Image (cartoon, rainbow, N blue to C red):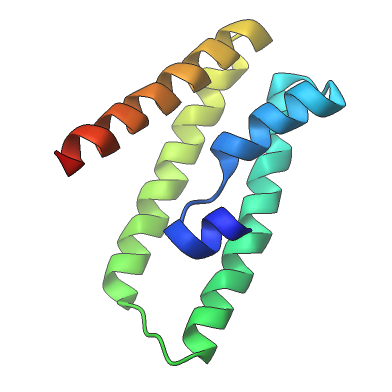
Length: 107
């Protein structure tokens, strides 16, 4: 919740590893669980933002929702073909790639 409020991130990069490490949850279930948590936290965050006077661009929001649905469908199909350990490797690689992007963008 703190990460979402401060940085606008869903927190999946924290929730998924925590679920796998601390609950022993299988990777595919951890990803699905984190998506539900992120959805609920995000909806409440948007509500608080709008309630506090913020506004959203409906066009940009709609485009990102469309892109999210397309990406979710593709990602779901790919993840079904990966074993738990391979899915963990892909997840870790994505986190590293995002971290490198954020760090190099700030330089």
